Length: 333
Image (cartoon, rainbow, N blue to C red; front, side, top):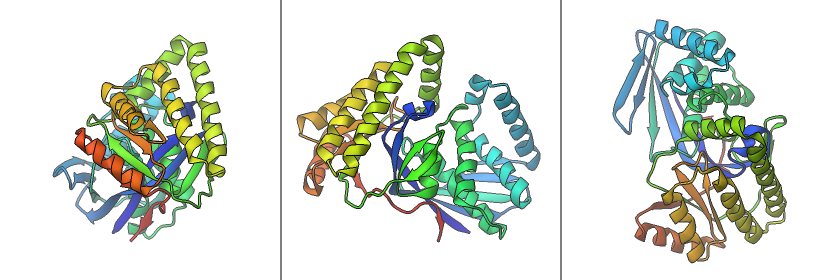
């Protein structure tokens, strides 16, 4: 049984969307492939790219899940943050067992490139959900896939994911998202020349989300002011997108970067990527995802300029590539 799910980029709205502000996201062509195989007991998670496997017995799956729900009910996010990433799969697996029944599986995860900072965990969780449903000859809706994938993100993000990642990879396409409203499709019928530039340092979404949450607990007025400003920028960008005004979208990307940078979650590498984009006349640029590492989005005026910028970033030692936005969501092949 083989299933694929796209990755995603948050065009604008990361971190603010955790606090019920607007987010704009798009699925991307870089995908995760999941293959499920029968085994005698529990779940084995095999990473094809890294040639690493981790195994959990059925009993361990149940114990890990019980521990997670206890910590979540206690709002003990610091302890959730300490949970191993692979334990996310145990929590999802238990949810799928409850819905479809128990079947021991080996899950092989295949990615052509690292998707850290591009919704890679959500992509894997969504593909796992659909693959298990198909393996068990069961039915599962896209909404259910997004909800269960977000449960996995609750573990891997340290207790408070926004939900935008899981919905983006489940539904695909372009979305606007608010916690209080859920996902809404966004009709974009034109090409957006976007480059993804990897900073060379892994994204630290769980750490940065927890850091922002802690800062808000200590100084809510300061953090809420930033989040409100980010929300205004994102809403303005949404209006510009609907008008196909990429020049304004690009300017607002720079504005978003400068505003969220006040939270001190940028890095020297991310800052360098932004500076290169400014020096070489990109329309806009900003980190995407959790910050603290990971990737930046760079907006070009056309495909020729995008190719030129890719070459410039590579000359500066960065992995950069042009991606297709708005691809289909999770699907079985």
